[in-house]
Image (cartoon, rainbow, N blue to C red; front, side):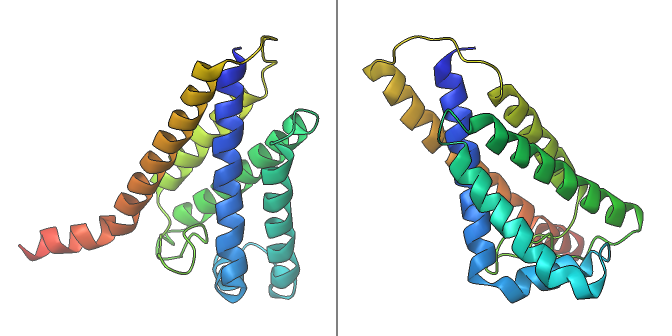
Length: 178
């Protein structure tokens, strides 16, 4: 695999996990409440579990930035994405869609949906792709420009899609009012 692809995936996923951890750190009580709402862990372990998840997210975000720890960081990301998808799926099968997913931060309420499971599946696929052994070749200025632009575009797409997911319930309400 071309090293540019590996670097783009690593930077994008690092940014995603770093921002997710920061949002959780900004409002730890909100994240803890979201985690408790899932109803999958004993109430007494919710605080400890929330801290562990944040620490793993931060550690994974930092680890993927270094070639020596990239694969362990990506492995942790894949584990978390699968864990989050399973938790969302269990609650969707229970008919519990009104739960805040805990991934949008305190400023945006993103309720559970199959789109989150699909999104996490896509991210997991990217993470696994990023674990491929990159070809050894020197990077040039065009590679660096490509990396910067790709990360910017991917970040913009993620922000836009996330905003659509946040607004989807309200849009459905407005559609029903017409």
